[in-house]
Image 1: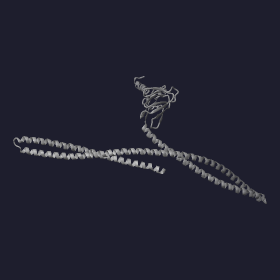
Image 2: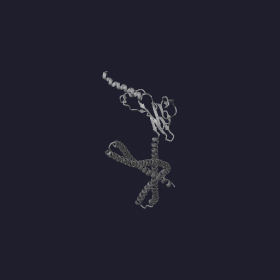
Image 3: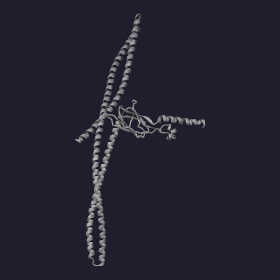
Image 4: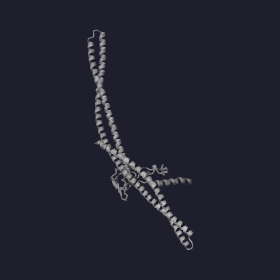
Length: 417
């Protein structure tokens, strides 16, 4: 064995070890989680010739069971991979029951590429895994309701199709029976006519005066006898066919009654489901309408508040601009006085000018800050108006949807009256 063979052996050993740690062993922890929590889990044991699996709950309590075990989610189970088909039922008040089967399945892992030739001989440590169960009851309920209505509709359509097919078969059977009875009446008439003609032919044979007449009469009698036998055979066949058709018609009448009863049951179930679905859609539409109206009112109030604040700030701005203008006038007056001042008045004029400058700077700063605030408010107002438009469109669509659904709900009630 050369030294570089190690590079093939090491990954193989690592692969076997890692896969055995992850997938190997006879037992595996399986998590059952629900949202909301607190659902009841009813677990039945799998089919196994070995001892029943251990069950460990989320609080660490370990159980062994021979009969169904009832637990509360979240729960952790330790299941035996040798067992097959653990039946699980999860129930929660206000939601449809969820049922599934936990079956260990072959689990792929990159290491299995290396392990594939070895796995068949790998003792009892089969590379199988149970899937964890994570159930969101709200999503499951919505899907369940959707599928339930679809199944009810499919059942109704199937019952309707079966009933229509039965009615069609019954109509075809009636038409065929009527045709056969007409054919039987005609055949009976033919039998009667041929019987009379045969009787006359027999009389003609007895009344023949020469050999030639005898041969002709005898030939005619044989032909009529053959026709009569054929007509009688047809009559017997028709009577048998009519008897079979009547039996078939009776069976179809019963089948039609059963199909009609099934259709009526499916129709009532479908109409009830439609009523429930319309009620749920109306309830959902009403909630959406209220939410949309609240959102629209909130957006409208926001727009009004911003407009009011903007109006107030614009009024403030005018006052601040007037104050800035007055401050500028005072500064110009102070500069003028400084230029005219002499002697001791110069210092006083300088002080007044510095004070006027400070007032002007303060006034201009206030104007700038107010303008920035107004600019920000205008930007917010623009965004709020867009938000209001979107909310208005949502409200209008919700109103139309609600009115349509309400109208479609009231129409069946008026029809039932």
